[in-house]
Image 1 (cartoon, helix red, strand yellow):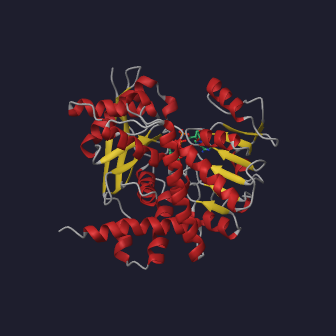
Image 2: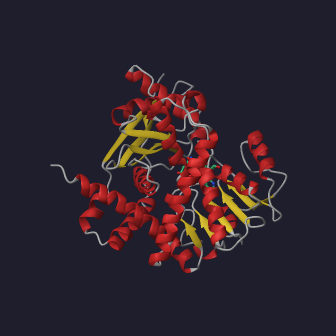
Image 3: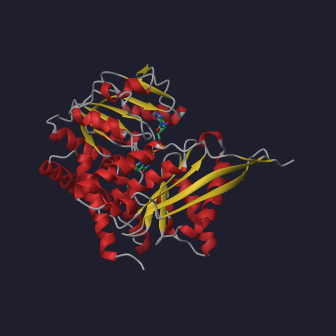
Length: 426
Ligand code: NAD
């Protein structure tokens, strides 16, 4: 017998949205814009929440909740990932969509910001169930997405297979293959070479620049990386390849530490075998994430989820440099504490923008049906990261601001200018 048990979405987590709005408020004030600019940019342009009935493999039916938020569309189609996580709520998606707007503006990618999420723990579902969830969600939001309207990508808990299912579902509905509706697709389906490592490559690129600016040689510098997924794993690997001693790494299941430096390729083989960093023989376990975040290292890269450094632990962070691999890993209060302590914080909208840059390259390639070599992709990515870094660094030096304030000021100005030039309709 089929039973239908509607699930209520969990209470939204207000913090990331509060943090995102506080950053916007700061930028609007620095730019001398009036309240109407804040009012316009602090809310999403469009939001859609959908119910997703799912038939489980054992025949039961569950109803999940999904969202798609388009924060801003003034510079082009919406762009942003789709997250599968038990903690997803509408406020989190709103914050993530807003950060996408600033990231696209800062990197001069012709998109607005968007984000999607489904409240689900993907590890508790089979591949067949995840495929059904993805296809139903895509179908529910299909009126709101498209290569000229809003383009999805992977985020926490989703991957290139998820994007292949989305592209297929959308295309079946349209009656022809529409490659440009998602990025982060498998290369065999029009994905871009270099996309899988693009966010990590950007994180490593700015980490090395930050080390250089702080007068720390990469070879022999120490780093700790939180999260060993699409972003953290590649960042740890690239930092290791650059000679940085990666002394600690974590995932949701545990933390491993080795003062001499972890053999990251060996750890990758362990994770491929077991699914987690826990139990890795080449390092010792640490009790928890707090111990990783407060290690005495040159470089700390939180690359898991938002709000991991808060007022509760920020005073214990000892890293000289913090590069935000994740979106929103610092709360506003924690950010201020770290700035006061002299820690160089490289903000998310700059640090992890490599993914959206190569997503843009993938979309351009798909629209032209013309594919670039991996060298071409990587050299164009490096060039964009360098330009963005220089702009942010120079602005921060000129105005005596933090890198976050400089990045936000540049990004918000770009979006506010687009609004002004387009004017209000009617
Ligand atoms: P992912 O699902 O591939 O990996 C997430 C990793 O974090 C996993 O190792 C997981 O075990 C770990 N994790 C989850 N909760 C944790 C916790 N509480 N403490 C410690 N570890 C935890 O996700 P991802 O794509 O690597 O994304 C990570 C972050 O980077 C997110 O904030 C995401 O929005 C951001 N981001 C991702 C991309 C991208 O291209 N994938 C681009 C820009 C920003």
